[in-house]
Image (cartoon, rainbow, N blue to C red):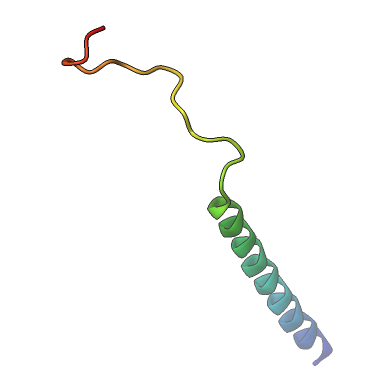
Length: 50
């Protein structure tokens, strides 16, 4: 019976770790970047000649 209990606790711990890792990854992806996303190259529009 103790081997079955150990296996069940291992499964529960692995599931909790997987859920925690998934929530951490989602939190990192939702974080705003430190610098603004500005393009390095801009193109002039057809009607805006200088």
